Image 1 (cartoon, one colour):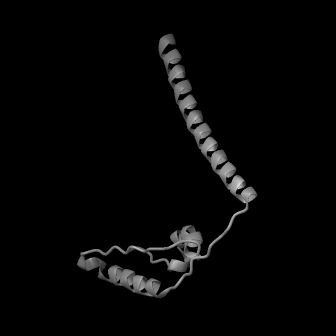
Image 2: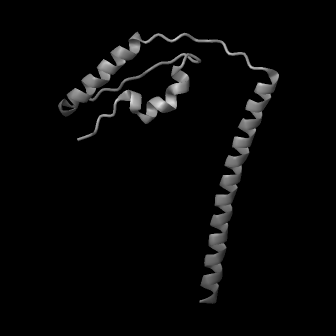
Image 3: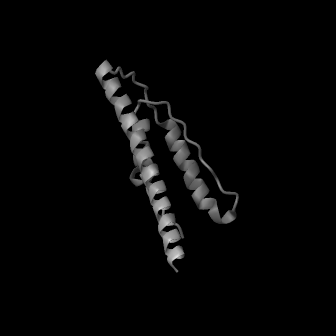
Length: 108
C-alpha cells in the first residue's frame, strides 16, 4: 500500500511554493485511475482538486530594478556555465576511462 502524504508536507508543494504564492497564474491537473482498486486514491485526488479550485490567488506585479535584473541574468549565466562544466567533466572522465582501458588492453 502506498503511503499518503498530506499535500502541505509533500515535496511537490515545496517545489511549487513560489508559483503558488501569487506571482504566477496556476493551473492544477488531476489524474484519475480507472481501476477499481484505486477508487479511494482517485476520490482523494478529486477532493484535493475541489479544495484547490476554491483557493484564490492574486497576481502581483513585481518590478525589478536594473541591478536586480542584471543579477538574475548573471546567476542564470553562472548556472548554465556550471552545467556545461559538469557535462565537460563527465565527458573528460569518460575519455580518461577509455584511454586507461586502451592502455591496459595494450599491455596485456
